Length: 505
Image (cartoon, rainbow, N blue to C red):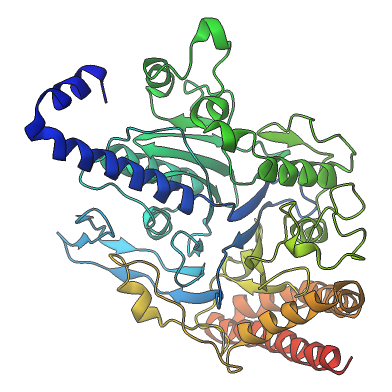
């Protein structure tokens, strides 16, 4: 708001009510941004030449604070739409619908907006983390677009780059309502981080094939070169707008740094974000840099050095064996609730690692390892994104309800019962926290054995799956789905056994 405009408003007493209303609205928006942009996620992207499997990988923890929260999963089929159909959004009235939307696997936390992650039928993975931008005068068309942006990408994009382009167009047309967000978007060929500012500004950078990128709840893109379309996409006026707002002065500030310029100061140097990025960097590179070591947007690693189990390790981490472990190796209690925000924490509701593989039949190319509730006290098990149905006890909301939820907030959580698998995983995590030093040992041993078995057996079975798919695809899909379901039920049963063992101690 310009100073002259403020003077004009104040000059007329008849406009005083309007001025007060505008002021209250700005305060409300600011508070909303702060509430929405809590430290609610952590993501790693591994370039296809950086992992031992030779494929792009995306690893993510989704967090949300609150009581009785859980992760829900749905498989949504592709859908045809009539010409002229529209999508009703939460804040903006409608946007045009496409004639065909893609099917997808979706994970979310009911009752928590923007807690959803996707793997669509074209093998595009999308997840996100909240960020805080310094934008205080965002531009919107209508009321802007917010929580459904990620879903629109999943429904429409056949590649990671296309998802970025779709999101960029929608943001430039409608404006993004929340303070800011960082999206990790990947397919089997490449991966991107898309970072959006409230209003109509955005930038995306491709993660190099031989590097790894780590995001907590802050912008991480630094140098921007929009002339390099292979590696950057974004708002053409990204720098000019920052100069106009006096956030960036080239003579004073040197080279343009998107993260520094567009972040709020308290978010850019937030200790919670710095600690998690620093820890992941040290674990992945096997180094012991100090906390003040500058972590770049992405960093190189030894060729094909990142393993699936190394990513499991990072997503379960609490700064063990460092000065930032405030529990003294669990002697002072659970590491999930200390004042140092850890990667795995009390509020982690689900965790996954997606392997986007080339050279496999489409039905088994994308392997998603999923852990429910906290991954430190629960196991990862493999899923395939093509599966037509989920194991019983894993979906709470119906697919039909999901399809009708465009214009609504995420549905409120229900009270889970032991009929749902998540109830048992949550109970196990709660029990482990009661005496973490004692209880985590038998739990870790059991889950290490399960994960080792799951990976080794799956490597053998995938050769059989390949043969079956070439022989009779319809029957093969049923066999593959049943196999994945059996592994998931085995994990569920082991969680029950572990819970019973701990309750007897």
